[in-house]
Image (cartoon, rainbow, N blue to C red; front, side, top):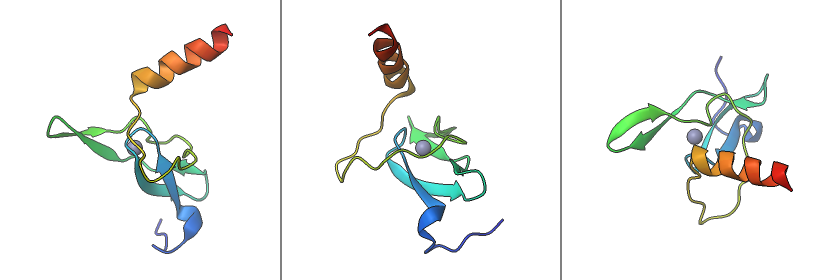
Length: 77
Ligand SMILES: [Zn+2]
């Protein structure tokens, strides 16, 4: 499937790598993408997940462990 580069719905913010990544318009989920870690490309956790709201220009990547910790924290409330 090809998507126009200027299609706004085709891009979403991935909080795991803090980048704008391509989104599958049909599913609303981000395509599989990689991020650089220790000089190696690894599959980003955000692959095939729904994009996040863009937090701002100084966005920093969120680790998967942080997200799990937050989820456990909020479910304990
Ligand atoms: Zn990502």
